[in-house]
Amino acid sequence: MTETLPGHAVDADHYRRALAVHAAGVVVITAQSDGIPVGLTATSFSSVSLDPPLVSFYVDRGSTTWPWLRSADHFAVNVLASDQEEVAARFARKDIDRFAEPTRWRPGPLGAPLLHDVSAHLICLPHETADVGDHVLVVGLVAEAHVYSAGRPLLYHQGRFGRFLAHS
Picture 1 (cartoon, rainbow, N blue to C red):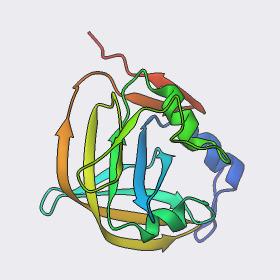
Picture 2: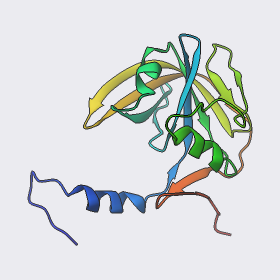
Picture 3: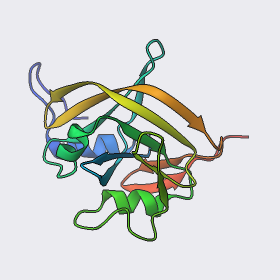
Picture 4: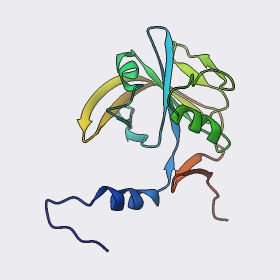
C-alpha cells in the first residue's frame, strides 16, 4: 500500500487503478440544444436527494458535448440495461453522430432524446452545477421518472462493460 502525507494526493496511475475495481452503473445523458440532439455516456451517475428528488453526474470540463448540455433547458437520464453495451460505447465515442443508426430513440415530452429499450428514463431540470477538479458536477431536479424494466443493469468495471449477477 502506498502511503501519502497529509495534504498530498495519490498519483493519477494509482488512483485510476484503485477506481477500476469499483463497479459503476452506466447511463446516457441526452438533451436537445438548438434543435440538435446531444448525449454522452456517464458512469458517475448518482441519486442525491429524495426530497427534493435530485440526481447528479460529472462531466469532463473538456467535453465537446458539455457546452451543448449546459445550454439545454432539461436533460434525460437513460438508465441502460445489461444488453446495451454497444449504446454505452457509442455515446462514449468522439467524432460520430451518436444518434444515427443503429441508435434507436424518440423525442421525449419536452424534446430531450429518449433511448429505446432502457431500464428507465428520468427527465430532469438543471438544478445546480459546480466545478470540481477537472470535471463539472451537474445536479438535476427529477421532473418525471419512468421505469420500464427491473432487469439487470449495465455495469462498468475495470475498463469494460458487463452484467450484474445476483448471488443466489
